Amino acid sequence: MTHLLDIDDLKKSDITSILKFAKEIKQSKIGGKTQPLLSGKTLAMLFQKPSTRTRVSFEVGMNMLKGDAVLLDPSQLQLSRGESLSDTTKSLSLYVDAIMVRVIDHSFLQQLSSTSPIPVINGLSDKAHPCQSLADLLTIDETFGGFNTHAAWVGDGNNVSNSFARACSIMGIDLTVATPKGYGLSAETLSILESSSISLTITNDPKEAVSEADVVYTDTWISMGDETTREKRLSDFSGFQINSTLLEKTEASVMHCLPAHRNEEISTDVLDGNRSLVWAQAENRLYAQNGLLVFLLNPSQYVDI
Ligand code: CP
Ligand code: NVA
Image 1 (tube, rainbow, N blue to C red):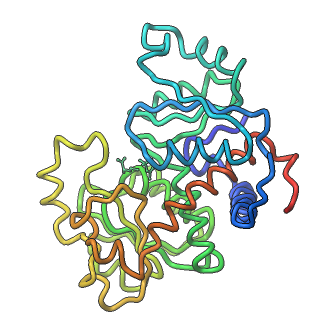
Image 2 (cartoon, rainbow, N blue to C red; image 1 turned 45 degrees about the horizontal axis):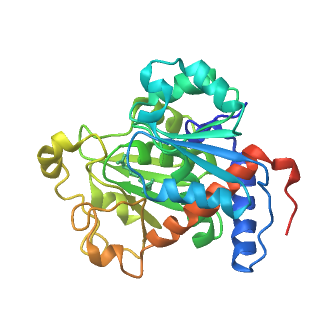
């Protein structure tokens, strides 16, 4: 059983297949001849936190390939009245083929996947955002013609950056990470990066981080759940904004997973400017979900278009 709790649940060859599916489905969509690759398949979706892109790209991604998606309201499930996770996942597996969940606490996802007879996909937790990483890799592949490139993360060592860093280590993307002191990547991610073959630099200096980068990536300084520390974070992240002054000596492209807090972690002119890959990334969420869903639910029926 393949569950996707973090990006390193996938091997390099799995990611290569998912990206291949994603690119072919994108081309077929643009050419107006999408195949019914998920016909008869249903995805259950459960969100404990808000979502725009993940929510819509998974549902549209299923429907585009003639599958279905069912949105579950956590407060309306018997789980909210104490039904066990194993009884819940066993029942769901009688109706649907996979469960995608956005959770407050990563350990809930681990418990859910440990009891689930069908694949569980992490649609974001406090620790990881692997589906975002797939769209990020697709965007880098399209932009640079592969992964022989150097990325810089500038900002918080959060869910998005931990998964992105692991994705870089799997695909061989050199990485520089600049965070304020106390906001670094997790010890587990650092240990994975240190044992990988990529060139890795860890710094607290955003200027150093962007100087050699082909692509600079950031995310909000105040993730969902961090709101009570907003003022402290705004102060601690001072100097980490991605703006035209920080980028003046580079030609690096810019990524952001969205939602952006304009003129906090990224200036509006850079977000909307010609370096920005942000809208390609957002669009690629759809095709990355397509590729992942075909990989998990129907890999053998995939035919080249
Ligand atoms: N990037 C991302 O996951 O966006 P949503 O929170 O809108 O799903
Ligand atoms: N780091 C952000 C990502 C949102 C997609 C958060 O967790 O809120």
